Length: 215
Image 1 (cartoon, rainbow, N blue to C red):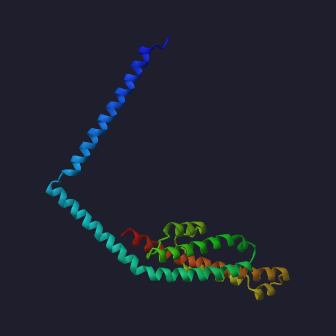
Image 2 (cartoon, one colour):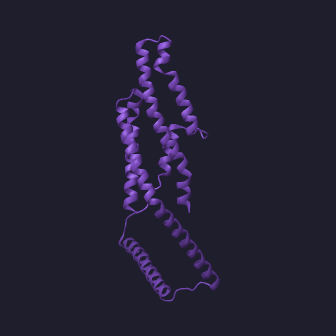
Image 3 (cartoon, rainbow, N blue to C red):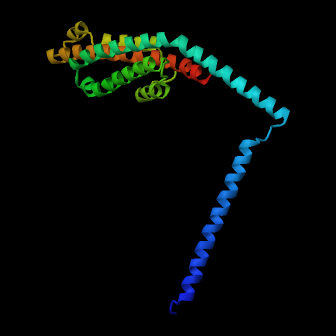
């Protein structure tokens, strides 16, 4: 079918008509918004009172949370400083440790960076950054059982240390290489013990931090 001038005029009329309708619609909407802003609808007294109560309650919760954060801030920053110092010391020990610990150094470096980051946020925003998710991720990484505690950890460590005692191994006439390796393993175990104790402390702090930030 050939396109004639009549077809073109019909198409233009349709396009212009739609454009005009859109412009009229926009003008009507703008006028409606103007009058709505000029004469806002008033809520019924009961609804307005309910909204005021909700806002007041929200503000109370916010103030309680801010007070808790402000109170907790200084202890939190101090704890972050201590944790950073501890991880630096841990890194030094790891560098002289066995293969397992050298493989884990990246994790410790990441932990140290995380602690520094949290501390900086605590100072910059005048409030502690609750690293609940990061703490939980660290605990999940070590897969500590729920009933795992410092007493159980110390008991397990003492048992391991006794088994690796050089005098015990000498009495058992163990080869020199085994005794040297056992001494290294004892050092590694002691470093690991320190790290796990840190994570156990973290585990005990997690509920408190989650509760603080849910207020």
